[in-house]
Length: 307
Length: 283
Image (cartoon, rainbow over all chains, first blue to last red; front, side, top):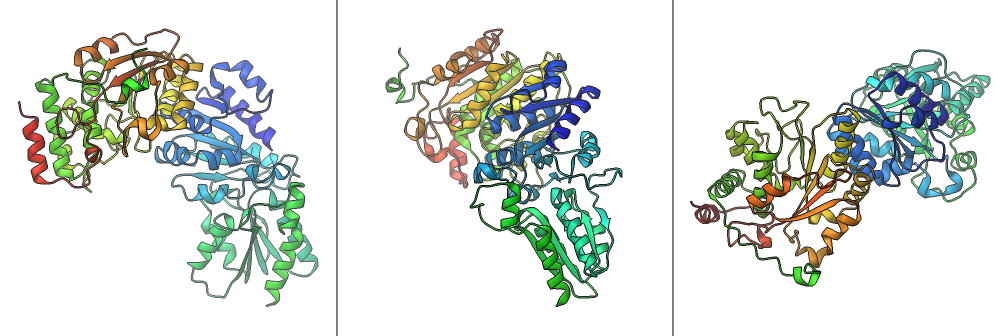
């Protein structure tokens, strides 16, 4: 997914002279073709995220469309004020590409695990937040980021995720119904769509029909589509590789709490706990430890459906 | 070395007399302050001559077309000094003078910190320190990419020079040899709490900018002729960004405001204080 994202930046830049790339201190060889063919629009500016975001804003104020890439925690935590003021307040066309959304960097520990990136960026006016499920969806999504006005955060998964999305046109702000079902609704964002689909499959084998709504745009959230599905089911579960505070689950909870339904709803958030991950290991082992898995979705939906 | 920290621990005596125009601009600041009931007075007085020379003689701009592509870009990174900027922008015709009398009012465009998009002629919203120079670096790089000839000027404060982001941007500006970028430092040696020496010493300050790759000049920041002369020579080096350390006095022009930290920011100004300020600035 990361490779596809950067490959697309290169492809888009070849066609659009407004596009600029800024990295901090990325791996050797990153985007070598971009650097070789368009050196005047390729920048590698060092471990200085505050300056990188500020200079990206300055370029965007002059009409550039700037793609910035580094590790997600450094783009979201380190320079939060630059993102808030330089990007959001000025409403400039800067795209922040965050490597390792969630617990991708499990072996590297809490400094590198982006567990609240969606929550803190969601609170910023004008910010668009994108978390696609696989590389093919990334391929369809990236061209849509060129003309979209205002700042965008693009949350990257680990890479080599199985392709689970369908080849339908990508629209920023749209949620996609991946599966129909009248017993429950599973809402997911990013790469955990695979777990949501697997869970729906397992639930179907038990006789429970769960709809799956994939939300690649966490902000602005597709409230209309979500409510359309939510109205039709008694059970709703959100799933994300992110803290249960303030992310997709928080979004869904806020909407559910303020909607007057004709029938009662039972709702649970599945995600990372309000804690810094306390183990190393792998992304998969941490997700299992914290129950961000198909099994946990199945057991949660099953329990809610039985009450 | 005649500029060791020891020498500078007492602010340099700056006895440059203010001419009629400098006093007029300060009176305008005081009138806006009176209407708003609050403001960073000392910080604005410190800036008047720097901004006056920039807007009178250096910057290229068109107040009737504030987004004119060939304009020079100016960023007041020390946004709290905005009263001085507002007075000059009004005088130059970016907006009607009446706006000055709505300073900090709900129906005005001029807030306690300047906002781009609201105020014609303001390129970037500032107020939180350490943001203007990175943005200016981006603008200067964009100008280079576009083969454009306009220049970028950023005014930063000494207290602002505590911020790491400013020095990140300084490294970046030097790396790219941004000769189209000029930083003016308002070095009045006072920040909110106390002197810069006590809070977080910047000395040797000019040497720091040199070490970061800038071509540096120091100037009496209240001398119109000195500022005019030094600004006429930017860039000082065709392969470096320029930094001008402007030695100033916080509150310059009114004896009871000069170097008086209670005048860094006033959130309440009495009619007596306004009368005293205006009297001190009489022609």
